Amino acid sequence: MKNFGKIFGLIFMTLSLLLIVYLSFSLERKDDIKISVIELNGDSHLKKDQYFKYANLDKPNEYGKLTLSLIKDRLEKHPYVKYAEVKYDGQNKVTANIYEKTIDAILTEDGKQYFVTDEMEIIPFLPFTSKVNYPVVSNPLVKNDLKNLKSAGKNRDIITGLKILTTLKLVNPELYDDLSEIDLRQGKDIVMFFSSLDYPVVVGRKNEIKKTIYLNSLWSYIKGKEVNNYMNYIDLRFSEHVYLGLNASLDKSESADSDDKENES
Image (cartoon, rainbow, N blue to C red; front, side):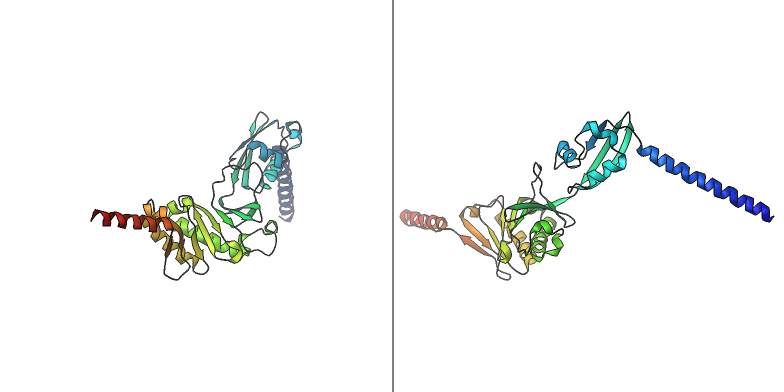
């Protein structure tokens, strides 16, 4: 019985080793393929040639040195790419599907531009980038160069701007889509600009979320109304009060109307 147990154990160990060798050989074979064509899908912010150039995949005559894992690794090192799926389709063709990071805003500081993702990651804004219709968060108060700051969560001023952005997106997607810029003014009073308004909205500092909700309430009254033609600004800096700055043309218009009524009488 003891000899049988030893023989059985030896056979089991031998089979296990053979299985491991077989699997290792299979995996190596899976990557040991000839590649002459790489098809890329999922490119939105950059064209295919720009992704290939960044990933050093722009030289088809060198594709013979590549493996599936190497292609995947190179593509996922691109700052715009969240992850990539790479598969061999046969006939020397590889298909790579990239999934770009979700962009929430464009961050600008000292003339330089960056993207901020939905995970608050700060990534470089690369040349030839397209589809950049995102709100801008500008002039944050920073101590060091933003290129060394990997996460927006490490800067209180940028967080404030993103909170305003998120509040608008939640309470009024239409107002969010109309937002063009949140100017943080390096720690001074925050000012917002909208595409459909010819004047700024002064938010100030503190209680930014509450003030943004006030603005949303006001929006339904002023959107598309003639009063916008006579306004210089909206001021939300004072607690629970909204001030509308009216320009001189409104006073002249009212004065003219008053004179017309007197003449009629």
